[in-house]
Image (cartoon, rainbow, N blue to C red; front, top):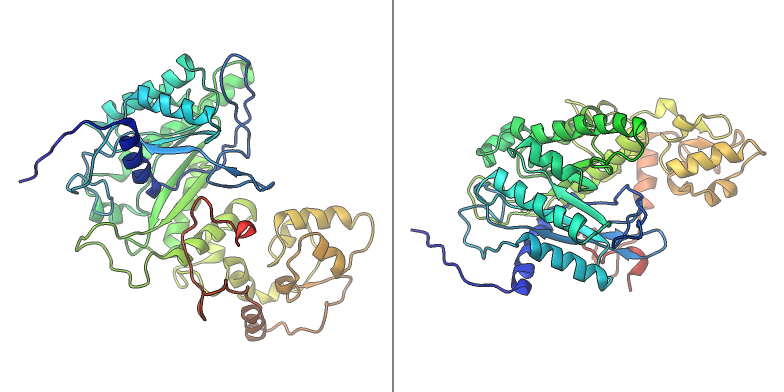
Length: 435
């Protein structure tokens, strides 16, 4: 028999529990919204500003990332906050979240709020509490900073709509890539119910764009768009299946970001896989690289993977792997190739491609120029010519290129041993600030 023992907690104790419980939700990123302070409130919001990372100028920028509650009516096998787990439980009140957000902001600890939640009582009850919290922040405290909030599947669409007019970004976690995986590890959750609020947010954003076109001062609905998250490695989906889901989310639902979270075995459950090597962090990294190719480089999932080759090569980034399988398209002459063709060259990013297209209008380029423009020559030299010449003689052969790329891999950190050590990034991990 399970006993539920309640005890009074102060705000600091609640914060310790609910901030720690929120660390498994990675679906937060830069805001994508510009909003200046009106002069009547506190805070503002800038497009590149809110994330758990470092900005281009080296600033560490962060937000208050908490769960409203870690109470939950569901018993998902992979979740630390599952109903059957014996863990300390806590819940904030809307007033407590407002107090924390404002006091942390005034102390310059944060630039915004990321608010997720377990399901307390029912989806409607939880969504209503989140709405009350945002309403108080926006209207009583006049907080104009960035707010990212979860839309609770199964909640009244009207509550989600009201909350969306107060938030900058909303997200709904898909949890697992396929309905089969969800049915195995979280049978109380159904795929259609998870997709319903995602579909609602997309439809309301489209309507809101039309309203803003007619009325410039109309309230904005989720102006920074929506994101989602999938757990990777808990079920047997291939990389091809995962990327097909992500591609569908981008195309059909205009998703801003799809996040991939390497599976952590936080519960002892017979249906959960035992991964001897720990969380599949390198696989997660390859999925993020492929996601970048989908969003910015014009690739499709079926170009990178197929049912016959369903998983990424862990030794190579997806772009290099694609290029080695399509050597008939190389070498590419950088003085003539169009922008989209340049994007397909390993070692040439979208910024470098844009610089090349602009610079060659003014004169000829050489390899020294390409390096200054940001081209990673240790990869690109196998796939390009400049002015009809190679940087130095190389063979356009898969084994030769693969051997040279792998030999030129980045140096390991001191103490990492002979094999690379992959770790999940934390708030303060950044190579520019390593000692």
